Image (cartoon, rainbow, N blue to C red):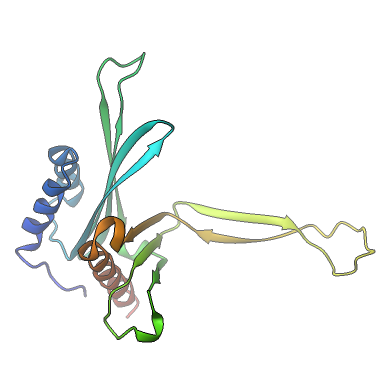
Length: 197
């Protein structure tokens, strides 16, 4: 059974959402609806800026782990245009039962790996979580290995879950956010392991 929520965790989550400065009331409101009063076990707040042609576009992803669910909240902004006189934002949430989470993949980049000590920092972390909502299928023509063969051998390929990926780095997000993602990955991995016991 997952560990129960630290009473101060919800307060820290609110503070991190507020500190991001990205529509904090909208983000918190959407997250509250999805949490539905369930206690937090762990969370990640990831505020990211991207360039869309000549425009800076911002968005935020909040991952929240409860004793029974993984909550994914994502908020995007939409600038004003010919059809819309004012800017708008979309806040979406998805609640995934823990037993649906198939994979928790953590890729970390470490500078000077020969000197890395257990528990040491990572320069970059990519957390990929799969629960079967989005699958990627990569196909290519199959062959038999005979270079002179021109028979149709059908296709071969791979299928992978690719529901959510979050990439953070010390340079862009800070060491505390990298550590937060690693702690969240550990808590989610523990929750998925405990469901099969």
